[in-house]
Amino acid sequence: MENLTHQQASRFLDLATMGVKQSELEQFLSIDDREIWLNQQIDLPYTLHLDQTRYQARSRGLTHATQECRVGAWFDIALWDSAQLRQRVAFALSQIFVVSDKDSNLIQDPEALAHYYDLLSNRAFGSFKDLLRDITLSPAMGQYLTMNGNKPQSVTGQAPDQNYAREVMQLFTIGLHQLNMDGSVILDGSGQPVETYQDSDIESLARIFTGWDIHGGDTLIPMVEDNSFHDMEEKWLFDAPYPAGQTARQDLEQFLSQITAHPNVAPFISTLLIKRLTTSNPSRDYIYRVAMAFDASGGNLAEVIRAIYTDQALLENTNLYMAKVREPILAMTYLYRSMDAYPGGGNDIVYDPMRYKETFNQYPLGANSVFNFYQPNYVPSGPLEKQKLTAPELAIIDWSQLINMGNVFFRSLHEYGQNRGNSSNRKELYIAPVDLEKMAQSDQGALLVETINQIVLNRKGSVDVLSRLEKIYNSHANKIYAVHKMLFIAFMSPDFMVQE
Image (cartoon, rainbow, N blue to C red; front, side, top):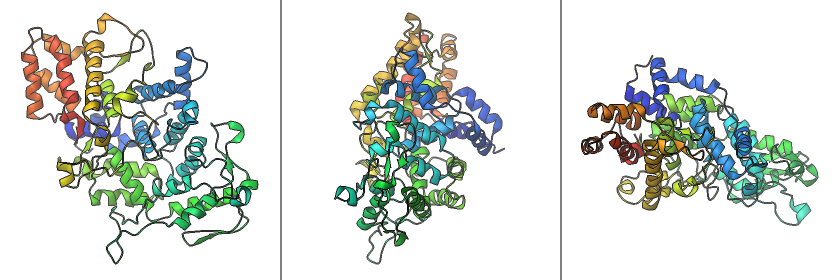
C-alpha cells in the first residue's frame, strides 16, 4: 500500500492510460499500489490492431481495409481495450520509431501499418534488442526508410542506401551526442558536444544493412535475407570488425548486440520515453534512475516502464520538471473515456476517425516525417524559452488547431451529449453524463462543480476555472443545459491541457 491520495492516483492513471475512467480509478485506489497495477496491466491480454482493422473493414461492408479502418481500429482499442498501459506505451513507441502513411507505398497498405503497430504493442514490455530487430526487419520500416532491396556497390555500382543506417542511430538508439547516464551531454576539452558516430560509421552500417527484402510482396512477415545481394566484405563499425563472409543475418545480429550495448542507449531511449509518457522536462535525477533501470535490466522495457511510473517524481508537488502539454489526440481519447462514450445506432466501432487528421494535427502513424509530429526538444518562444523548458506538443498546437479542437469537443458534448436523444447516428460517438445531469437538476451545483473537477481535472482545477464553472451553472434557469457547457470549459482549460 502506498497511501496514494485521490489526486495522485488520478494523475498516475492520466499518465499511464488513454484517459481516466472513474470506475478504473476506484479499482486502482482499492489496490493503492502502482507496481501491482503495472504488473497486472503488463500481463493483460490485448487486442491486435491488424485484427481490429479487418473487423472495421467487415463492419463497414468493405472487402479491403482502408487507412480510415486502421485509424478507427486505433480509436477502438484506445477507448475500450482493458490493456491501457500497453496502448499508452505503444503510442509513445510509435512516436520514437516512426513510420507513416505519408509514404507513397504505405498509404496504400493500411494492413502493413496496423501490423507494424502490433509489433510495437507486442514488444512494449520486452527486450529492447528484440524490439529493434523487429523494427529493422519490418516491411513497413523497410519501405519507409528504404532499406528493403538495399544492395551493395558491387551490384549497383554505387554506395548502398544510407537512410535507415542514419536514422537507426540518430533517432532509434544513441542520438547525435554522447550522454551521461542522467541525459546530460558529454563535452570535449573545448566545451563542444562529443559526437556519437562519424560519416564513416553510416557508410559501414549501410553496407551491413544490404541483402534484405520483402518476401513475395508480403508486408505482414519480416523481411528475408538474400545473401547474393549482401555486402560480404569486411566492415568496421565503431572500431569493431565485421568479418568478411558474414551473412546478412550474422551482420545484423552483430550490429544489434553492438548497438544495444552502447552506453548512450539507456539515457537516450529512457529520456524519450519519459518525455512521451510523464513529463517534458525530466530532472537529471529522474532520467538517471530510469536509465539505470534500463542498464541493469539489459534493456528490459517492462523494467524501464516500471521505473518511469513508480518513480518518486510522480508523487511530487507541481513543479517545472513534472509537467507536459497534453497531446491533442490524447485529449480526445480522455474526453471519450472519461465520459464513457459509445457508438450510436447499435454500432460497435469508431466509424468516422479521419476527421481528426485535420483537427488534431496528428493521428496514429500519420507523422509528416521520421522526426515525428514534433521534435522532443522543441522550445516555443516566450516564457518557456526564457526558462529553457521544452514543450514538444506545442509545435502542433496553435490558435487554428485550438479552434478546430474546440469545435469537436463542443459538438461531442452538445450534439452527441446533451442532445443525444435527437438522433442515433452510427458514425458518431455519444456521451450520457446522466449522473452530472441529475446533480444539475437536483440543484446540487457545488457537488456538480467538484465532480467535474474530479473527472476532468484530477481535483486540481484552479480557482479561475472552478469559478467559471460555477458562474455557468448559476446563469441557467434550466440547470441541465449548463452541464455540457461546464464540461466544455473544463476540457478546454489549461488545467486540463497541461498535465502536472
